[in-house]
Length: 109
Image 1: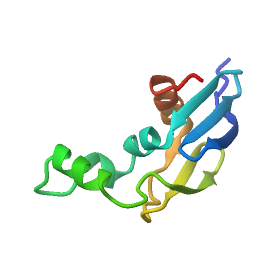
Image 2: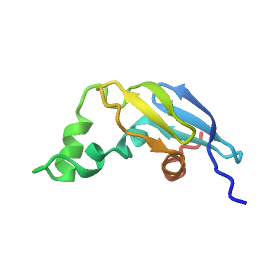
Image 3: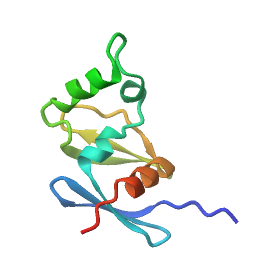
């Protein structure tokens, strides 16, 4: 039996930290900067033509309100779409991707 693991609850517990409780009982915390750095959208993963990934990262990291989370939209029953303070709102985080980055970047308090 294949049971899909998905978030039961997502909450902002500090200005720059999310807590996610998963359907299998795992609790993770992730900094908003780590969530943003792992945006799966084509713009973030392929970069601007003519710019290296490093140059794009440096340029993007200097954007004002880049890591300010304004809203999280639920996409069906399979993903979330964060809306960021700099206007970026196209990165759809499927449950599998969200879980992976949360486990890798987990912040234990």
